[in-house]
Image (cartoon, rainbow, N blue to C red):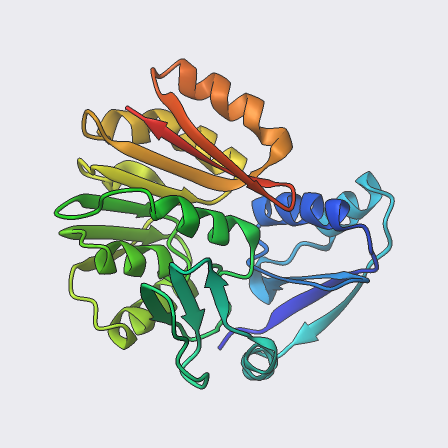
Length: 271
């Protein structure tokens, strides 16, 4: 397992924490831990560039500290802090070492590793909540930036006939595959890729990534979405909404719904 670099920003302001997360995610940081007093961000040691974190810290006038975290130690720390997440009475996300969660339509068991998508972050929570209103039965689904695979797994549980899930990260593909097996999924195809070029012709597109990646791929996504299809976009801050809506309007995508949590948004578009 690869070592990671842990960057700690002593920032109690939750709004500033969310802004830092968005900026760092664009630079390859793939794990975050938010507390009341600080933000911890993690990036594989091989991808760490001290100049980038210094630039971001200077941009927002915040101090930071950093340390090396061994891969094995990371997993132990992650597991010790991981708690089940419940989205209304719809979905419960838990690890295998937790007791079953009752009173929900779907229960998803994930291994809490480095991959994004445990449900703790507002964007994953929002995507799951938006998915509840969609009809996945018999549909083809494209999960762009699958992370832990939780959205792909939920899509299959909701009746999707075929789910293509992609991610650029080795760790995410490995983790999503493990979680797929744990949840007895058989309709998910995992592909390692960093663009939406392999989307095929889906009926539903799920993209929980970040503003820049979404904008870079939005035209391609729209061109591949089946007529009458639905696109859910998140990984977006409230401040990102205007740019996303402007780009979507130029592609004849119609905004159907918007939900917000903790300064993050999830936008639903129809083709």
